[in-house]
Amino acid sequence: MKGKEAKVYRLRKALYGLKQIPRTWYGRIDDHFLGPGFEKSPSESTFYVKHNGIDILVVSVYVDDVLITGNNTRYIENFKQEMMQAFEMIDLGLMSCFLGMEIKQGQNEVFICHKKYAKEILKKLKMEDCKEMSAPLNQKEKLSKNNGADIVEEAYFRGLMVCILSWFMHYASEVHLKAAKRFIRYIKGTINYGVKFQKSQNLKLLGYSDSDWVGSVDDMKSTSGYCFSLGSRIFSWYSNKQDIVAQSTAEAEFVATTSATNQALWLRKILVDNQAAIAISHNPVFHGKNKHLNIKFFFLRDVQKNSDVTLLYCKTKEQLADIFTKSLPAKKFELLRQKLGGLLLLDPELVKGLLHVEGIARQPEGEGKIRGTVLLSLAFMKALTIYGLVVELALLFENPFV
View 1: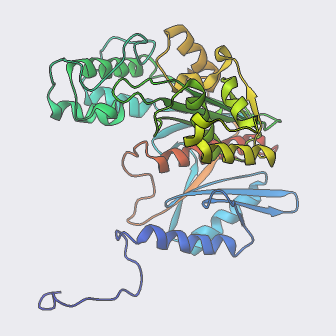
View 2 (view 1 turned 180 degrees about the horizontal axis):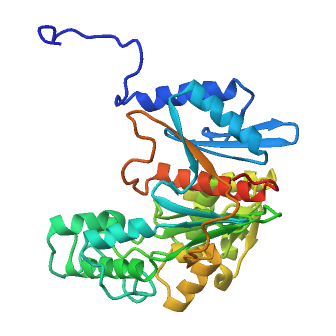
View 3 (view 1 turned 90 degrees about the vertical axis):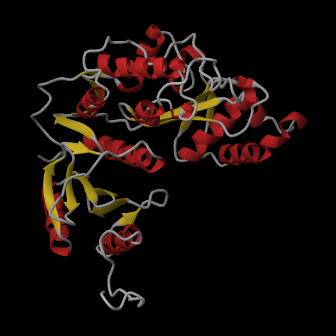
């Protein structure tokens, strides 16, 4: 305030835009849900379930957007009315977009794609008419920071590298630019592809874990990858370079398995394709050369002993997580891509019919839809996982709502 710039004011309520708002908002909506009888998931603080006899209501919250599904239409409508009375919210109706994804819902199936975002990338980079590629990376090419190639203009390259090849953000050369453009050409070739979830009566939790070995030329570190499915398609996936330098393929697989187990202890089965890693976790004798893995070792030993996780051997040719750890030949890449999520051509007819997921959103400034582009952060990937879980549950309900 003019003339009182040196004064400090204590707010009576949280103001929209402050850094404290997310925690304040979460505390408010969490109290609201727990009041009318919702049960909060012990492993996911934004996932709520409410039972009323045989009726089930499932709610997932992402910031100020709320996903709702259940097996009773009236139960769902009553909940939405209660929410709009308690908060300034608008009903977005049937879910058609979420976190930048386009969603087409049909009878007993939900189709998710990124077509609009893909078009925006191509337009931004002026590559709408580029040549299409069948695989994102060249199997024979190993990227490194110091490859001797000429450095490219950083300003042009930065936007491309953030989402594609962030490891080489500050070492951008002609080689990296070529690899990044190849990835864009892959996006162009798969712009009409997406993931189709289908109704399944058997919600079987299944995971695949894999790792390469010393795949990084610069620091000799390996890459972990895993994916989990529930019912029809994968709803959670991950690919990242490991923190330590694995001294053998068994150690690399062991680290990858630990990451996968941390992601989902509640999964029934985790499949790994390295028998040595499984042998280490079952063997009561701990080898000296593996001492730096002792924490991970005892962690995996305990979760197996408690029957939280079962490790099974998976042949490399059947290992779906292989796609997250290294460059693959085009045919193998396309085969694994199909097995992972049924990435099928966009079906224009998949628009009408029974619809399974609805949403409401808080309206802070007259705007109820998702704002801006959400980057692939850990929080975003976590939200995608929960959304996939909600979709699978919605497809399971025998009385989906419209």
